[in-house]
Image 1 (spheres, one colour):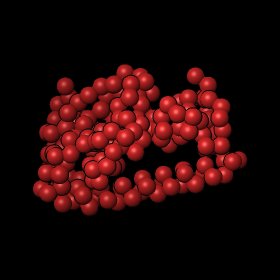
Image 2 (cartoon, rainbow, N blue to C red):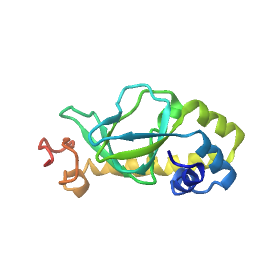
Image 3 (cartoon, rainbow, N blue to C red):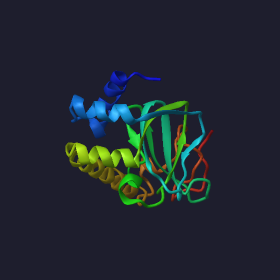
Image 4 (cartoon, rainbow, N blue to C red):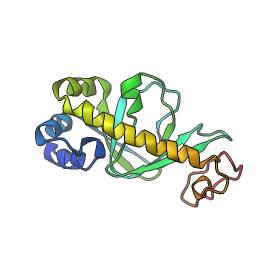
Length: 175
C-alpha cells in the first residue's frame, strides 16, 4: 500500500490535479483506493454503468471503441500519470469505450460519491476538471477527424496497436 504522501506526489503529476494545492491533493489521496490489473485484463467495458475514475501510477492501457467487433477503433493509449473513466462521473451514462491493460497496470481509483464530495468541499477541483476534460475532448475530436482521411498515418495500425480494425482497414494489427 502506498503512503498518503506518495499518493499526493503521484496525483500532482496527473493533469487533472496538477494545479491543486497540498490540501486538496491530500484530501484526494486519503480516499483513493489502489488496484492492479494484469496485461489484457478489461478494466472498463463499453456499455457498463460506471462510477469510478482511474489514475495510472504504473503501466499502460488502451481505449477501444466497439472492442471485440470488426468495427473496433483504437482511440488512445494512456500511460503513467494519466487518467481514464472520467465521463461516467459526470453524466451517469454507460461507459463509452472499453479500457484494456496493455501491461501490468497499477492504478488509484476514485469513486463517484467521493468525487462529488471533493467537488463540494474544494470548488477548485471541478473548475480545473472542466478545463482538462475540454482539452481531452478536443484531442479526441482531432483523432476522430484523422479517421476520415484514408492516408492519415494515425488511422493505420502499428505494431504496438491492439488487434483492432480501423474504420478504413479490415486488417488486424500484428501481435
